[in-house]
Length: 384
Image 1 (cartoon, rainbow, N blue to C red):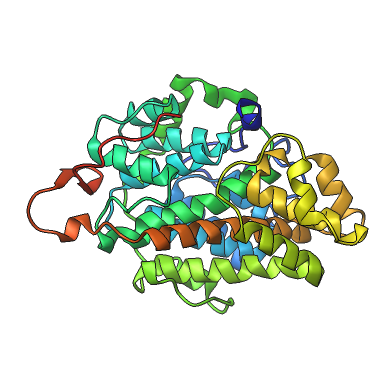
Image 2 (cartoon, rainbow, N blue to C red):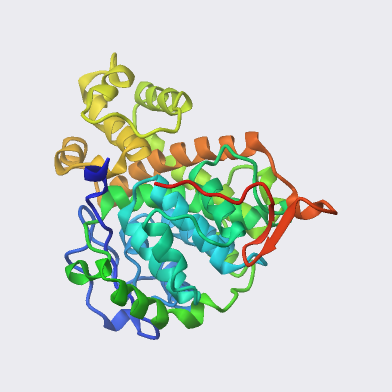
């Protein structure tokens, strides 16, 4: 498994800079050429502007790599914004969830990013200890981490905060897969994010935006007019649910790039997934791809890799499907389809587990902490 964590994602921290004046991160992107901020128009330009304002980063590689597919870019950003950045739940607790999901998915890019962002919240030890495989001392943080890594467990927070915590978890199940499949190894130039001092300095540079609550719902105009699925029950009508319903619709539309039989085959495979990482090698792909015409297998293989093991996507996998006819937009949309299939599967596990409702119960049995309200019995996370 350690070998599977070989790619750390690309990016560069920069608060207060004009993204249109910065050079593109030419070495960060594996397969697509992002839309530069200086030439971006319409919805893409609006996303870039809000990203810089609300996240405190002039450039963010995950969103840049989505930029050839404008609708996927906007829906992904707004889902992140309305769950992680806005709302009543403490940002630190939501960053613990994002980090826990990223650890579970072996997304070393996102692990480094959210370790750094926990520095930005002011808790300089928390992210470092989680990344080392330790259980947080705060019982609320420990419970959130355990839930993030095992989404079938009961929710360790009040039902009223489900839009933020569930939304954050699902956002990063999706983003982890995009990052692992489409970006290169370095979160920062020369792999500098491996040094704690650099993570600390990067976090301090982003402290202002990280500690400033975004206005709920302000991202929704960026997805106005886009298709959407029914809003999820866990969201209770909150903006995070509106954004996620849009993300599901626009990402699922990437399945149109497959033939009918190929789409059905990958959908069946994900429906039967047990949530575990597949074994090493490629033999696990044989069964779901069996029976598909040769011309359908490359696309179906790329979708399944993105869904189950995006850190194993290779140049050969992309080239076999893309050839000379597929565009950057096509590639982003196909990978988004694989990512949303897996994310929706996780969503079903979370929904089936139900809410703990801990914060809605009076009396004993709960622990109050900086993470919110958690059941007293859920005070230990998992060691990686």
